[in-house]
Image 1 (cartoon, rainbow, N blue to C red):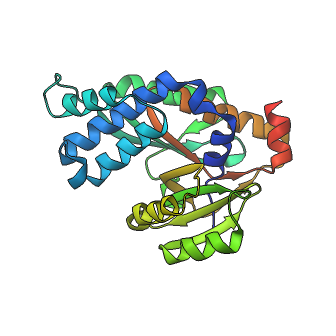
Image 2 (cartoon, one colour; image 1 turned 90 degrees about the vertical axis):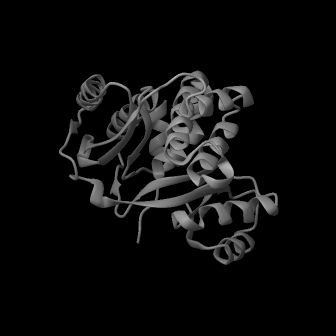
Amino acid sequence: MSGHSHWSSIKHKKGAADAKRGKVWSKVARMIIMAAKKGGGDPTGNLSLRYAIDKAKSVSMPKDTIEKAIKKATGEGGTVNFEEMVYEGYGPKGVAIMVDVLTDNRARTVSEIKKIFERHGGALGATGCVGWMFHKKGLITVKTEAVKEDDLMELALGAGAEDMRDIGGLYEITCSPAAFEGLKKALEAKSIPMEVAEVSMIPSNEIPVNDAETARKIIGLMDEFEDCEDVQNAYANFNTPEDIIAKASA
């Protein structure tokens, strides 16, 4: 399977999470609530909750905030209900986009998602229109300066990685979702710093975007999805050279 998650790398470099920490905490709290509702409040026996807590820690969410979210899910801190939705559509140049949502108001959310697509020259599509282009994978990126390529590849493949590539300043490692925790722990054991460590939707094919104006529109679209409180994650299958990204972000 080819493809990688170019947007995940761009998003990290742009520092969007740090700039919008309050909103990021709100999103992660929803993730914790959903995981705890489905599998219980004990992370030792609930892999989804453990992953959500790890994500909360990675964005410096306070321990008491994490605990409050778990209590909300288990009924100790009041009841809260969110619905999981996936919206699919197209951005400029036919770029395929998937949007994962946790919402307490489906009508409000679908209206907002539709408007975001349209504001940036895209369109909301029917369920299944692009989902077949993406596959769930563990995704880890490591700065190329942090470790020798051969050493990282040997460690990653030994820990269950399926693929590793240099995407310009970063090594991108992909694996099956089942192998993600073991791979992450193997890198942690060797004190290898990870830039991105998440279970993501990886596109099986990519659309090259080589002009700054189109790249600006697509990145603006993805940024607005990331800024929407109901959106947990947004995925796209575009691939843009670093110099074009720099021009688009200027």
